[in-house]
Length: 412
Image (cartoon, rainbow, N blue to C red; front, side):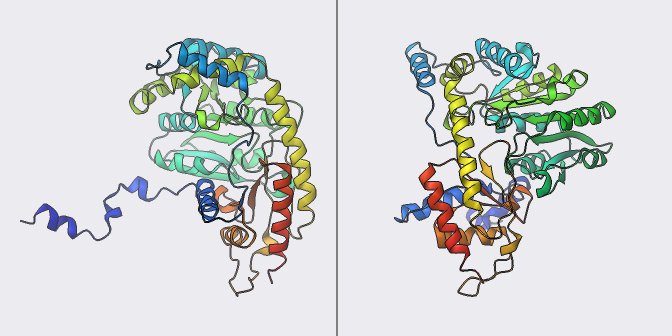
């Protein structure tokens, strides 16, 4: 009989001992590119990081004050799994005020970020072999969350001419008997596209014709919307019971590190998500929850001012992008990203003879040559694009685009 040590030594690659689900899971490329940028910065290089989806504004002072008060008031114990009752009430009021969504506290589940909210819903709905229709280009984690649930992602994408929004006819054609959900973000990460009322009405019609399908509407960028008004699919009466609305504090309140997301869902889904969360994480941070009550019920002017600043930056980077040959853009209606189509550069060579074969090659070239961090479009299901965040100071954005232009001019 082999000893434990001898048996262990026979396994040359210990990663083969990991579960299949983790071995097939892709690392988040947004996190990966930000990591590479930090590594170069740690070496003393002047790197401008335009890869992370994070507002560069501080959390508003009145929200931070609420967190300090929560500490002083002793909110340091476990919370109910689905959130404090006062917070769930505040979320219901926010949904009614901003989105015409009518929920009761029992329809609300508070989680550790909107990412966990989405994962909870998918894990509660999807069995092995079930399908989830994903509107692409998609946020990087959508595919991996569906795969973690042993589901099959079915991606439907549009073109640059329509802000990469697929037609609703294509969406309906992708639905089959094993489709459990339609998953999308609006405003979109990575494209900044926003589904308009007409498109949402068509999506509602699709749901009515397919009562076995639940829509998961990721509205985390709701407040960073340049169209004048945000529209929610769940506000359409005929499909209110077929829509889960996901939101959170990270983007609209500059609270990425606080980690709080929430959902409004039909009771049967909310109860299931409460159950699964009770076995994984229990309730999210008590201090963050108390601060969230203040965020959702008090002065929204800091949020609106941040959105105004992002719109100014959007216009700035669109102008700077015009100076770069081969960047094909549309005007994003929300979020804080440009998603240029960059096929012009694919197939070109660096001065050392390296071929730029794909968007990852291009992003790595830009990072190494221009010291600007971006994200390859392949992470979002769009090989021909790159994502550029404009969540940075104006002068940094100007410098970054100047650096990119000079670096790309060197490609042959």
